[in-house]
Image (cartoon, rainbow, N blue to C red; front, side):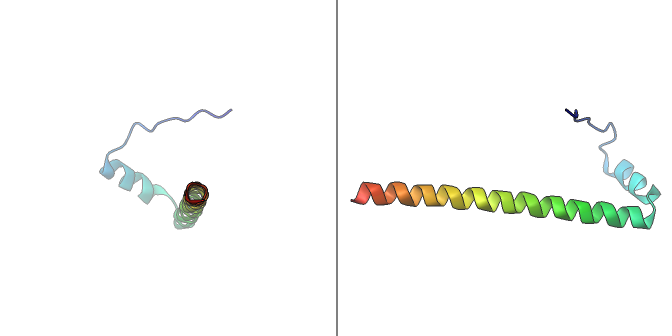
Length: 65
């Protein structure tokens, strides 16, 4: 299993300086990957909310009848 590691440089200036060292094609790839990750996270969250909503509807209907 992979272990998560934290980065020691969390200040905005350090991150910007690091970002500038990446070649443009690498920055584009990182941006695309982050966009995909955010989209997947959003879809997962939306599906979870819909599932919870459907469960609540079923509970409400069973309490009505």
